[in-house]
Image (cartoon, rainbow, N blue to C red; front, side, top):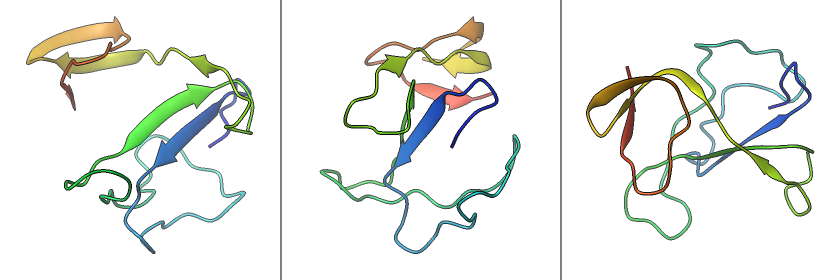
Length: 91
């Protein structure tokens, strides 16, 4: 997904054939994109998410993701960027 700031949101491990949006479609917060699956090295459904500076994931540089409100290890945080090993959940 290309953002209005010309960054790219990379999402992986969708359930096969579950993506509901089309290339070039404009989406907004709350739009259902698809369903998480367990592709890759995992036995449980999950979603891989990161932000990068260019579209090509092979040469892109990652950027921090900040969330307005997010539960981190059960504690509500605002304007926060999660770090490795934290368990996060939508507020």
